[in-house]
Amino acid sequence: MGLLSIVVPCFNEEETVEIFLKEIQKTLNDYDYEIIYVNDGSSDDTLNKIKELADSNSNVKYISFSRNFGKESAIYAGLKNASGDLICLMDVDLQHPPSLLPEMIDTITNEDYDVVAARRVSREGEPKIKSFFSHKFYKVFNRITKMDLVEGATDYRVMTRQVTDSVLQLQEYNRFSKGLFDWVGFNTKWIPYENIERAAGQTTWSFWGLIEYSIEGLVAFTTLPLSISILLGTVFSIVAFLYMIVIIIRYLLYSDPVQGFATIMCSILLLGGIQLLCIGVLSKYLEKTYVETKNRPIYIVKESNIGDD
Ligand code: UDP
Ligand code: MG
Image 1 (cartoon, rainbow, N blue to C red):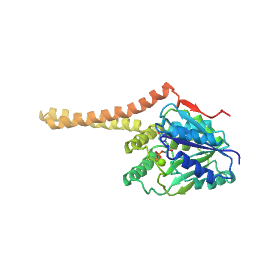
Image 2 (spheres, rainbow, N blue to C red):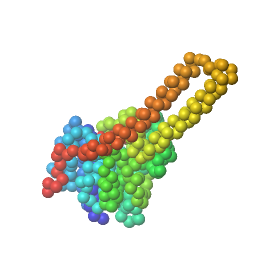
Image 3 (cartoon, rainbow, N blue to C red):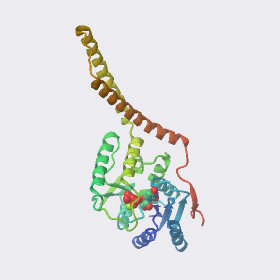
Image 4 (cartoon, rainbow, N blue to C red):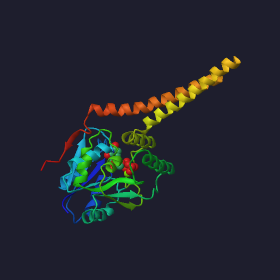
């Protein structure tokens, strides 16, 4: 095997960057590797910690963003700057156990796979409600998109250069990595592992953050909500038309226009609500299109030691 590039996005991880390096050094003693820390606009001492590590260790590379661009952007930047023949993507908090790495590397080099990725099979230490919504998300996502996301799939993976280049070809601004990795295809082997709590520090994902992330994912990979709007509109138009005929007939036959303030209020509110909902769905897609057409860079680098030597 040639060089292995390990891409690690870091956001306020001053406590974990060094522990991570130590673990990797222990596990990958016999391998030729580089670690690319992507400092995603941390406001703590992460960057200085990484620089210290880089000073004393030539395997350590870093890219530091001008602000927080989000994990997806950090992944993109890391992949773009990785020079290895195999590329590995990992979280710095050791929730992606480095002990799996030798097996993953062995599988991708000796078996006919292009990607070896880790799949979380237990969700211990995670709030029940989070697991519940996560489970539902995978079900809904796979059902309404034509994709097949594996439940518990993580970003922890080792990929060949060919797969990495394919992922880099997808230059969209709204990056939903789980979807992008699945979209490019190739042979993937899934390795199951038990959930592990963070080595130190705190997760930066809030519950609402995850819900928003799920919506982004759906909008990026399916336009079914737009078709549902059309269907809703059609159904309601047909019902309204039939009801109109009923009212006219009742008036002509019995001179009895339908009365009732309540009926009118209910239908106005219901229809108004549905209209706003459909406009909301439409605007979500418009928003994404708007952002994409601006063609802004996915990240901006403030400093880096890549290409220094
Ligand atoms: N991360 C990042 N940018 C962000 C948020 C997170 O680069 O805006 C990194 C973070 O440093 C970590 C990884 O993404 O290495 C996963 O984040 P976290 O552990 O907070 O998420 P969780 O494991 O709870 O899904
Ligand atoms: Mg984590």
